[in-house]
Length: 427
Image 1 (cartoon, rainbow, N blue to C red):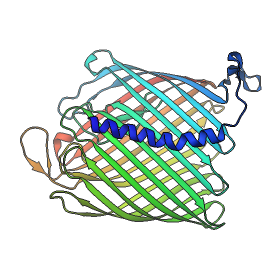
Image 2: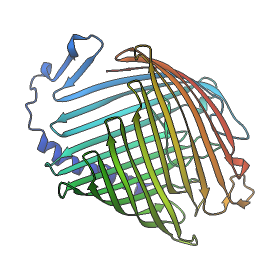
Image 3: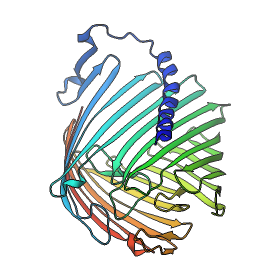
Image 4: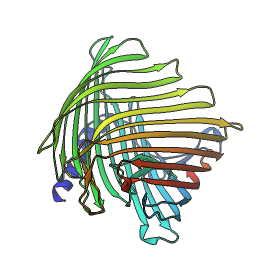
């Protein structure tokens, strides 16, 4: 635990060391000196419902979400599903600074969850994200991001409590408490009008706090992409990639590979990127080396003035937290469509996703039987939602999500329905 705390401090310090010189370099602005001038409330275009809060040159955006939800399988268990209503309150605040080509955004959101009957599941989640971008010159741009989350149920939620991202491995049959630190640093330097060179570094420290017996990991990844500007809107690239994963217990790994891809913004309506690659992984201990294809793709498409489509595909290799000396190859697809209606005040959304997880080594179930078998999981979900913009700063809505896991080991099968109504204010 102590060693991990040092690493987490190193993660934060790495981002801070990069941020501090740049913020001091770019903060040559006239800051208010009096207390009254430092905190001001302004209205854009004299509209009462579009409020801006400033402290000096920093914009403040406080936000608060409340949700009332019924979850029919809180621990995503196939054998003993437990359902209950719960209330979720998500207070938070975002700080934004922008000057020239430099910007910094820091957001913190808490998630206070209280169950009506199963009070032993009560929890408080935490999520903080720092995102920044700096232009050192016309040719050099640097981005730095730092994230922290402490989540129960293994999912990161948005500001009204809707699950949006899986944190770590999905562990059916239990409420998983996960703590995660992430740091990402990217730089891109224009070599000429047609070429650019990049450097991307990422590290992640994942700790499974509860239940006991799960294995955290520390992961480090480096990519060096070379870009060719095919047009003003499209870049092609090739990259070299290397990294390492250190496990709390079990087989560590090192890997290397390469990828090719493109990033584009077409006609102002289609924006996306795609990368496909090859990766070779070596494991300590008895696990054989793995050669596999990896891929990622993201698409944002403004089909019309009121219609948008978002899609993503990801394929990668992940260390297993549930089984020592194991890993799984994951392929995931997500698609969401949004449609605005009734004077653009109502946003309807629908989508779904599918994920295939193939474990590389025989998997021992946690039933205590000691039996090991090959494991593969097919996980899919459907989601629909409706959001109504009551004011610019106030919205309300409802959503429904169904998800299911079908595993080669029936102990990990589950079905889950979740229905929520919510409201959110944000300034």
